[in-house]
Amino acid sequence: MRALQQLVRFGWEQALSCLFPVVIFASLALTRFMPLPFLPRYDWLLIICLLMQWGMVRSGLETRDELKVITLFHLIGLALELFKVHMGSWSYPEEGYSKFFGVPLYSGFMYASVASYLCQAWRRLKVELIKWPPFWVVVLLAAAIYLNFFTHHYWVDVRWWLSGLVVVVFMGSWASYEIDGTRYRMPLALSFVLIGFFIWIAENIATFFGAWQYPNQTEAWSLVHLGKVSSWLLLVIVSFLIVATLKQVKGREKQGDVSEEAWGRI
Image (cartoon, rainbow, N blue to C red; front, side, top):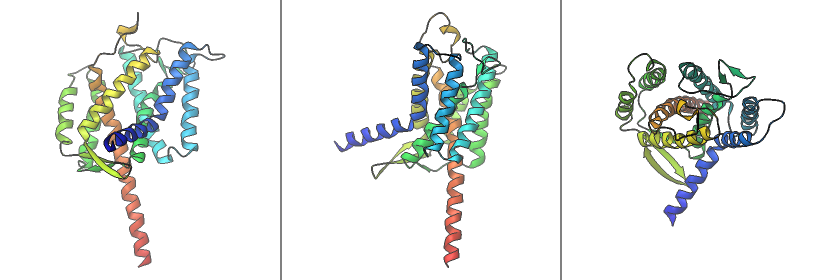
């Protein structure tokens, strides 16, 4: 019973951390079947996402520092969207005033919602990293993963090599988290796979509600290829590395402030 209770609590904290993604999915569903006045659907989705982001910060669910990270990932995702749509990997067929080179601006919030989830879960579960790799290794790995999303259109796709490198780099790394006063830990590589898999499920829901279309979904909706899990896994790693770096920097700053305060007392 104790294990079951802890599992339920873990699921509840995860659900609360997914507030931003849930709002996006609910908006996609409602705007899909509900007629909207004055503006096209994509523009309403942008307004909803902006209001949600404002509400998260205003209510204290997100800090200003977390907003900076989420905004950065929004821009990273938007740049990827612009390139992928240009290359024909997927498309946004509906009209919208907020479309830029075929990409609606709300699409960046779908990436930002992943960073939002990570920030929320990090705080709620009091995540701590064990045996985190050196900073320069993390930066180079994240940069290589992100660049491969662009370069594989012109060169060899090295995602599986990068996936293997992730396993090597994070082989001894763990994520420690707390549920109801009890701490648990999970291999970081496993957490990446799990998050990537659940985002793939979310991607199927999003495409069903017409968030975007893959070429094989033009005539009718079909399941997103399971191979996309690897893409999301790598993208999650980029997001995780950005959030983890912020948390570590802020943690050092906090420790520095405590040390200065202690010296002042002495």
